Image (tube, rainbow, N blue to C red; front, side, top):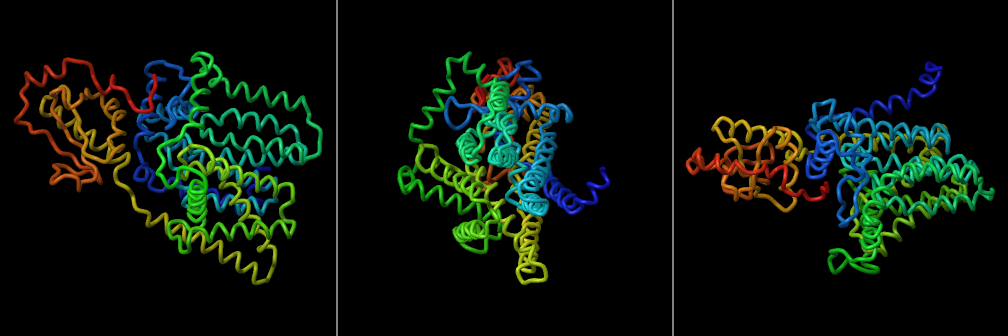
Length: 496
């Protein structure tokens, strides 16, 4: 049985392992450890060390709205595997990444045939845009995994297979844990049910609702305990204007902003870092291909309507509400772009011994080549996991060598880049105070150009050592008598 599967799907297996290599290439060097990862470590520590079974994760950019706890609980085994070091989470996102590759193969094979599944998995496996997304240890990382299964579940409803309500109930129930914006796609289930022209199976629908309630229970329990705090905050975040620039706050200007991000995402997906043509050309080309596939009846009309609404819902929602949209908010659209290009390439490849087939092979080779080249030459922003861990370790060793029972750390950097160190201080069992405490001050600098000199360099991070002559043992010991401010000071986005 296994041998038969391997023989039949050898091409996908090659793609699978190539995609895995892309995601584990220089893992620690590309581990962009910053504030979100620091918060994740703090939350995992709260669960394991403080024995606090959490109902929420970090607070989002919308005040009072939290990410669900699932992604943080998934990280726990990997923290334990590496003795609480955050490097273990690379294994988690790698597993989720290769699971997504398999999911594209499985779901698209069921929907469109084996060859389309192979093409879709290939595109996802080697596209540098997806590879970099899969390397990020953040709650939004599994959005593509969620999207491909939701697309498949909606297709099942369209085909009249009402057992899919259980799958969809589960997917809707975990939205809170990844990206609440995914909820805008829920009406597509109703559209698919109507287009199927099959009566609702209330038994399966009820089971799907039960699965949803169970999966979503942490949210319901939290809301019950805190007087619907998040529900109110979510509503407020949708109707309250954010800090927009004057040109992108309302109306057509906001629509233009969303379309610019769509153009950018699509171009990044298919051209990688090279991007040889203007961003909007790629989008227009995909739309033309989409229409072509409809005319050729390669995509059924009902499914075409679902796919069209999928895109229009995203563009419409983010164009009219007050959310200050970024590229990652639109990642849920990417499943449609992959479907369009996979179906088109499969159409061309079917034309044996023709120019179209040769063109399709050429495009796939160029596509793979551009992304392999992009992976090999991609610059490493040397301010991530390796550098932050090294600079914290040095501060600890230097302070111990000089007999300091505690230290303080200041930052000379751009806003936001002073975050992302506190979990490492805890991991090194350091007592870290604020500079005003009188403890010896170590200053982290990023980038180096912000100061005239640095005493030590750790990649893109610099360190200015204390003026040791200013500190005497009695004064330092006195500054260390109070609480460890690294443990007690509030942390942005973290709620106990």
